[in-house]
Each structure stands twice: as C-alpha cells, then as structure tokens.
Amino acid sequence: MPITDRRITLRFLAAPTDVATLGGGVRGGRVLEWIDKAAYACAAAWSGGYSVTAYVGNIGFGRDIASGDVVEVRATLVYTGRSSMHIRCEVASADPRVGTFTVASTCLLVFVAVDEAGKPTPVRQWQPVLAEDVRAAEEAEARTDVRRRIAAAMNGADYSLPSEAERRTTRFLAAPTDINWGGKAHGGRVMGWMDDAAYLCAAGWSGGEAVTVYVGGVRFYRPVQIGQVIEVTARLLHTGRQTMHVSVHLATCWPHEHEPQPAAHALHVLAALDADGDATAVRPWAPQLPGDVALDAHARELIAIRGRRSASAATRMVAI
Image (cartoon, rainbow, N blue to C red; front, top):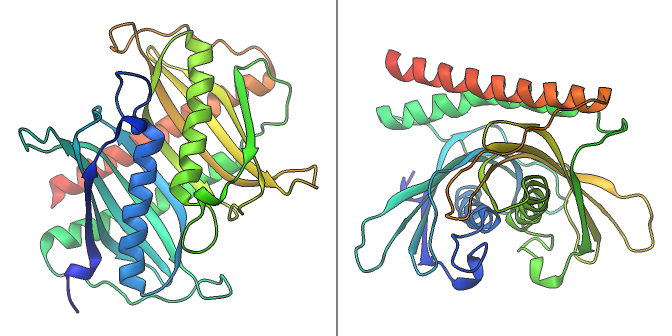
C-alpha cells in the first residue's frame, strides 16, 4: 500500500481578494475553504471516489497570512473508520523572498465516502506502523468521544427562547460558482459563509474589527444545493476578556419554500482588535433572559470540554 496517497500538499500564493480588509490578513473563512479543498483531495485519493465533509473540529488560527505569501496546505489521513476518513490539515505560509514557512492553522476533518446514491460506503483501512503515525491515529480516535460530547452539548442547546443577544442574519442564493465536484456547494464555501456571519455579529457587538481565532464543532446535516436560499444566523453566546463566542446556524430552502431546514452548525470564537490590529478588551455580555443565561452556560460547557480534551491529549503525549 503506497504511503504517498494518504498525503497531499497544495501550494499557491495568497491573493489580495483573500484578505479580510484592505491591508489586513487573510480571512478565516478563506483559510477554511483552503483546508476543506486539501482534505477533500486527500480523502478522494484514499477512497478512490467521492466523499463529503461530515465534521470539522478545533481549528485554531495562530497567525495572520498576508496577501502575497506562499501558502502550503498539508493534508494527511491519520485514521479510518468503516466509511470515514479522519484527515489532519496544517496551513503554513512564508514570505516568498525568505521562504521560511510558519504554521498558521491546524485542524482535524472527518470525511465520509459515499456511493452514487449518496450512501456511506466502506473505505480501505489505514494501519499505522511508525510511532508517529500510531500516535496520530490514537489521538484522532480519542477525539471521537470528545466530538460526541460536543455534538450532544450543541444539539441540546435551545435557541428558540426570547433573546436580547447580538444577532446577525444573512440571506443569499447559492451560486453555480459555489459548486463542488459532486454538484453541491463546497463544504469550505459553506464554512466561509458561516465565518462571515460570525464576523458581522462580533464586529457589531465590539464596535470595531474582529478576527476569528477558533472554529469548532462544525457539523453538516444536509448538502447545500445550488439555487437554494441560504440563511445564516450568528448569535453571541458568551464573552471573555478579549473574545466573543458566536454560535452560527446555516439553513437552506428552495425559493418557493418558506421554512429553511438546518444544514450546518458551528461555534466561532473571535478576538476584538484595536486600531493597531492587536487584541483588545471587549465589553462583557451579561445575559439576563433565561434563554440567554442558558446559552452562556452552554458556551462555558464547550470551553470546559475543549479544555479537558487538551489536558487529556497532553497526558497521553507524556505517557508515550
């Protein structure tokens, strides 16, 4: 079994159209698109067929990528289930005049191989041998349980109660330019739309610029069809000293329908920025209504789950 077909690297230049604002760094949503494309290419090479994005978790944004930087997106298959492929992605960039790459973002994506009818289909199994590969597979498998806990917490949150929280909604049509090789909207494009809505919500609350520093718990419930109406709602859940935790729901329907159906959900954490582009204090959100209080507690629960996962991972690395 050739080892090379479980790894792929995309290399390109970051364009001026990729940046968030004039003179700023590349948008978080654009980085999400790059990650999804590289991971899809890796999943397709491994499965030998079409696959869909099922979950994206723990995307940390550690540093800005500037327009004109050389970008490398490295995708590596690290674990397989019956029909799932767990792929680790790392985004790095470098000034082309220097050539020293620095990691900007890492995450784990789960793709599911599907047949022509869109049903999950088995994939060949990856059997790691090298110590580094074994550790990566064990970490991916361990995150499955964390992913279930995060999904259960997110599914149990009630967003239907009256709220005074900052909220922004965008609506538009999915265009032919958003299509992927399976005839649906790119998973990365969907995540980009969600990040845009999260930014609008965070900027509205902070009264200034904001940048995405974390995206997690991204779940896809149904494919997004070209020509559908896309409705993305971002709602403030919780604030830290410099951060805003924003829940984003994406729903879809056909133009002749009136009730959008859930298609994707994620949690975005954004940092408030001052005029110099540095992280700055953000006014605190003090929820009063019962629904807002419950969702603030929900955001704190997700923080605790992520914290336990990080501590557990560190313990396993020490044991190894």
